[in-house]
Image 1 (cartoon, rainbow, N blue to C red):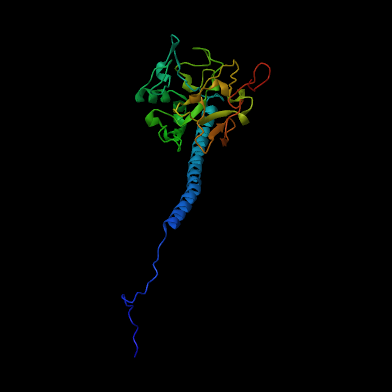
Image 2 (cartoon, one colour):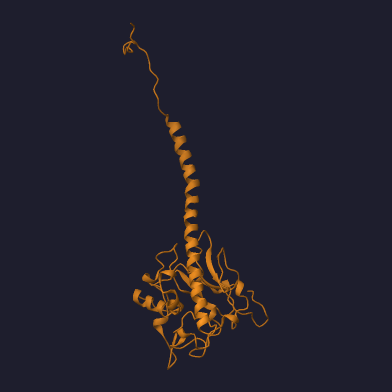
Length: 272
């Protein structure tokens, strides 16, 4: 009987060694880095797409609340700051003015409690009987822009009062403004409901309103906005918007007429 002989370590026979050279390892690492650079952004965009869909759902629910408010109050839209003026005496209600912390002039910085009070006195507070929740005003892509932090994930179109401001008069308001009974704009006053924005993703500071209108008819142009007043393009390079006809869609950048309610005296809604 023959048996297999063990290799003789003294025989000088060399056995092959298995492994990678340094160059081969570097090539493999390079391939992994390239693949990661391709795959991770795809996953990131996919996650953000999911958050964007949830954000659009929030805006649709806000749109439903606005629809019920409008139906309850003779087709009138809520004001962005319903209790901005106090009656009698026509005094500015400082508690209703939202300001970030810190904040430059003209409005002083506000504490968390003061910012939350301002939100409660805003259009968001006017919709509370219909939304029954503050969480609906938090965008999933910016969780810190929440009522609990004195901020909002969504901003109301300030043109719904800009340009027709009448201090302590029938339009801007009194202490009863949240009732919708003091002469605010009606939904029927919007020239083009299909392309007029009502609510968008808020600016980066969580301000609950986009304002800056200067035209006497409520015409508003992108140039009227400072950087901190514009919708934050937080969803893959764009923002979500609720339009006056109730639809919600992703927008890459707003056009000059999408925050405009009425045409100007010449019948124009475009900007210079």
